[in-house]
Picture (cartoon, rainbow, N blue to C red):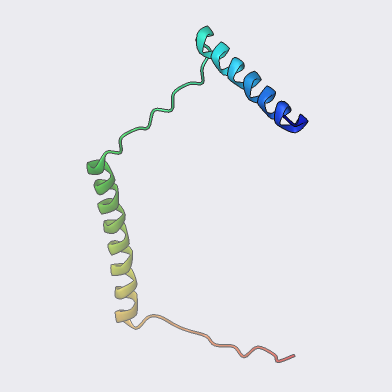
Length: 79
């Protein structure tokens, strides 16, 4: 066998020994526990945001329909 293959096999053996040692010692990484999303709470937040958006749109429409909106246009200097 060539020298690089022996090194590769040696590294694999060392890594396997380290993994086996960590499993025997009980020293493992903490488990990632995903939280199950609450679809009812998500839907309620979406509805709250939509209600807030609707109230803002109503205010904007009232302003536009009242005719009190004033727009000033200025011409910028061309360079």
